[in-house]
Length: 138
Ligand SMILES: [Cu+2]
Image (tube, rainbow, N blue to C red; front, top):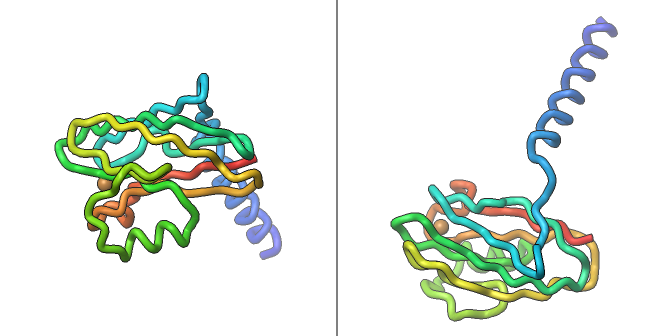
């Protein structure tokens, strides 16, 4: 019985490792710019890495025939937008609407700390569908 538990534990560790490995390396800015493509209501890349205090120019291209948005912030910011009623976002750093077929730019300076922020779309159902990504700071 102990052997079975050990085997199950090893299998679980391998699964977690495989999941982490398949995510690949997080994307980084090139010359201060990160290009993000929205396709089928997903952000690509969906995993970014930045330095504390780094200023990043996000160029966000929506290839879908429906509108989306790009909201960058912590969990509280995401919650406010998920429950909010702001249908259209004026270009505020890190918060921008991306109409169908359009490309928009927003520039954001990350805080001087380590941690992570989320970017997501809060049009009805999109965030729950998985339209979100992670930025690791540090
Ligand atoms: Cu969306």
